[in-house]
Amino acid sequence: MNAPRRDARLDAAREALARERADWLLIPASADFLWLTGGHARVTERLVLFALPARGEPFALVPRLEAEALGGECPWLALEVWDEDEDPLARLAKRVGDARSLLLGEGFRTAPLLTLAARAQCRAAAPVIAPLRAVKDAEEIARMKTAARHADRVVTETAASLRPGLTERQVAGAILARFEAVGQTSPWAIVAAGANAAFPHHSSSDRAIAAGECVLLDLGAYHEGYGSDITRTFWLGRPPEDFARVYAIVNESRAAGITAARAGAKASAVDAAARAVIAAAGYGEYFIHRTGHGVGLEIHEPPYLVAGNDAPLLAGMTHSVEPGVYLPGRFGVRLEDLVVVEAGGARRLNEAPFEPALDAVGAPSAAG
Ligand code: ZN
Ligand code: ZN
Image (tube, rainbow, N blue to C red):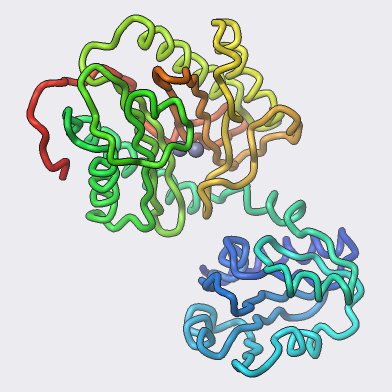
């Protein structure tokens, strides 16, 4: 991370501290840590903290065996290195002293959290830090666009390789391999065939895919730290009428959600617009999750597109629109695109087509 961008983020965090009349911001190993410092802190039982005072210079509390790596990534950052036989919170107390009011980031383990809460007034930092991170700059959006292009290609290639007899797990493995072959990191995949697609977060199993059933592919990976997330649903063979009907409804819902997203619109309005299409078609009770979530350094992060979240969307936010209809015991359809919020609307980051019918002939092949 270059110095001007880092300084801008630290200044924004200091402003949040001042607004909240808090003395210190303490951020454990997390995506917020990465966003603020540019350094990767490992999430382990050993405490790592980025500590930013309302006035003055920040430091990082870091265990000895992580210090060299963090120092290499963040040469600008002062390190408070603790040894294995030390209590890191005692070390922290020496620096933070008699601070009265702390803003704590997501990711603390229970014991240090309770210790800090016994010493000072502690509040969650998320309400003031998450909105800063949710608005992406041009470089972040460019990385997400590249990530989305890789996801578009992987979902399209994977669909073309689907054959009766392949198991969900084999297809998932092939998805991970496709991402890794082009340098995308931490790929993941949900592959759900037939009635399994009626479970929105199905774990890919050893169930073989058969001709004449649906296959849902939800997948993503990270490009230079920024995530992708796309879902397409297919039918192996010629789709029957009920599937084709649900598919068309879900696709219309997705389009309505994207149309409703723009700077200034309430997050809940996107959910309402997508949900209205599905409800009007009589499938409202089968759309059992929120319409979308922010994506950036994490695959799920604010803003959440859900009833009750009336916070306005801001230009530069990136989020999914992913309505679904899940018919227990039969099939499920989810269609998901990522968008970037702009002044007059939302621009899709994904370009993968919506063509559910797949050729069902052909022998099982290693979906490499
Ligand atoms: Zn997804
Ligand atoms: Zn998603």
